Length: 151
Image (tube, rainbow, N blue to C red; front, side):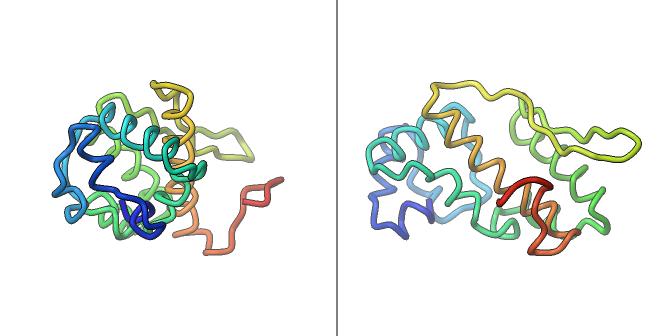
C-alpha cells in the first residue's frame, strides 16, 4: 500500500476492485486471501505502469510488516530469522513454500512456485525476493549481496 501511496496512486481504488477492506491501508496485520492480494498487486502494477511495484512493496522494512516482521527481526540468529520467516509465512498462507536447503559449502533460502497470472506472479516474486534479501541482511549486514548478483 505504501509503495502505491508514495507514488500518488489511488491504493483505495485498487483495494475496492480486489474486494479488500480499506482498513488494510492502516493495519499491517490485516488478514486477506493470498489470491485477493495477488489480484490487487497485479492490477495495480498494470494500471499504474509501476512494473516493479512488488519490489517497492517488499522494500518496506521487515519490521514494518506487522507481527510477521517483528518475529523475524527479533530472532536471535540468522538461522532462526530464516526459520521464523518460513514458519510465519506458512501461518499466513497455507501454500507458502519457503525453505532453507544446503550442501557442504552453500546454503539457499528458497521459495517454491507461486500461483496466479504472469503479472501477479511477477509482483509477488519481486515482493518476496526483497523480503527474503532483507531477512538475510539482518544477519549478514545491510550491504550483503548474493554471490554473482548486483542486487
